[in-house]
Length: 107
Length: 107
DNA sequence: TTTATATATCGCAATATTACGATAATAAAT
DNA sequence: ATTTATTATCGTAATATTGCGATATATAAA
Image 1: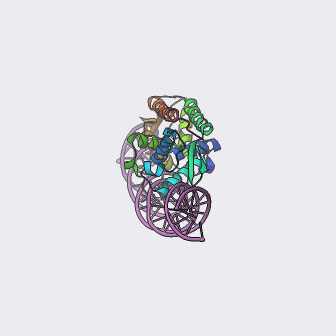
Image 2: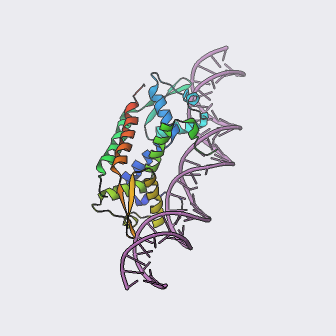
Image 3: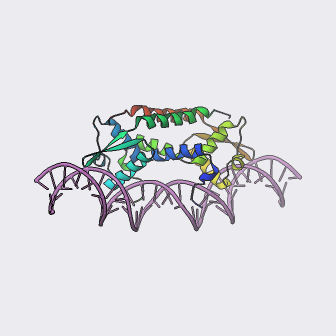
């Protein structure tokens, strides 16, 4: 016991939950906001901006990359992380569709 | 180590992340969808509908109640859980505002 | 080639989450 | 008052997440 029983839920429900999970950390929220504020392709100024160690940031970036919310482009010894607009919009719509199809019922 | 370093993030970032966290479980997604599908105030038919034990469902309902997404009304020995429309809309707007204020930057 | 800089990965400790059996609490029914 | 049904809480085991030091990897600079 202890593990989430994903088998008993639909793949839509699991997908939505796993997207929410990636966003369920203030550090990852902060990283997304920071990346989005920068005009140029900024990489690990993120480490200095956010107050977490470099391996921790790298790990958070990986999770954001995994669901495609950002993508990293290697530029010399630096890596440039950017918002992936297509996925971004998709995720936003997925969430809105969840919120909109849930109707007020009673009480 | 191990604990999320909430202190270094803004209260907005923490608030948003903690809302995402409540939604980051397929069981809670399923509960919300089920509640919303019911015309009448249905309570722990939820236990039979979702495939989780009664204490587990009760625990998930508590988390949903804590952020105000649902509220429970005691009706005899049963409890009727309903979507709280006001909070529901608030949460949706909070998320949309997060998605909309994040702009596409580079690459 | 050596050195310096930037990023990723590994391994582990601390903490959090998930799930549920046992049990308590509450209220209707008998 | 006792029984039955419904829900909440407690305690605990299994697993997941968070964070970071140590280290590996990769590329630019010297």
